[in-house]
Image 1 (cartoon, helix red, strand yellow):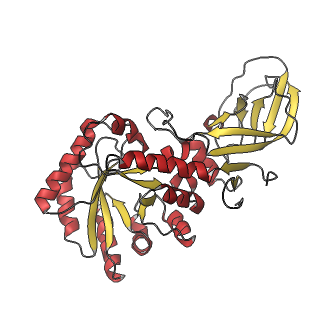
Image 2 (spheres, rainbow, N blue to C red; image 1 turned 180 degrees about the vertical axis):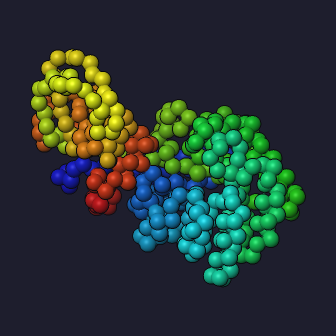
Length: 361
């Protein structure tokens, strides 16, 4: 199997164990998890590992990923994190729950749910400061009123999103605000909101430190499961695996060259005018990865190799003291952006290192 390069080696057992540890941890305070698969392109084997680890739902932002997982036999309830108006018919047909912020979209979902003789469940997202998506709190009551009047739609919960676009930290203040909104809405409309989804992997520190989690009973967790860290400072979560994903690339050139290009320097392939530090001649190693696959800044060499730069199809490494030859393999750990890029790239093979049988896709 090692002939497939570049490849990303995926440990399903580590993902399953991370999910189990987090599921048990959060359930200790009554919080269920949605396992988020958008960073891994809805890979069914990874979704199955999350389900085996204890998540109650699988959540993704793209209907195409959900269809892939359903077609592969994943039978858990699915939640769609992003709800385009144009996909309402398919959403009703294929998704159990969708997260919504626009009444026109909910009306379209209602229309298609009625046509399909189905009931569609919605979570209404509220804006609590991060400025990505959400109904403004002072508009929430009217939004709920209109939604309750629509046929074939059930409001199953309220949620919020933090620390994605604006980097706003989940804390006792905004989590308490979400709980208070839930209490007011339930009282005003005499409804029972089953899911109160307080955020994502960024909620770990709040969860650990909070003495009272209020009404929050669900989180949408992806990066913590996949990479073993919280997402405010990317600190490791105790007991979790950090290297469930390993990117492996092939050395395609290894030569001693100058450290400064020769001739007049103009723009590079991406419109930048580069600058260089003259370190004299040194060993320069090129690997068969480039910006079309992943940004070099999203990689961390397992062998302490320094990344010098990259182009569309090549990443250049400082090979001094490493004795790398053409055909050798170089390994990297990935951050979230790197994982997202390499799992999306059709040029990076996906290898499951510890499934029942190694599978390469």
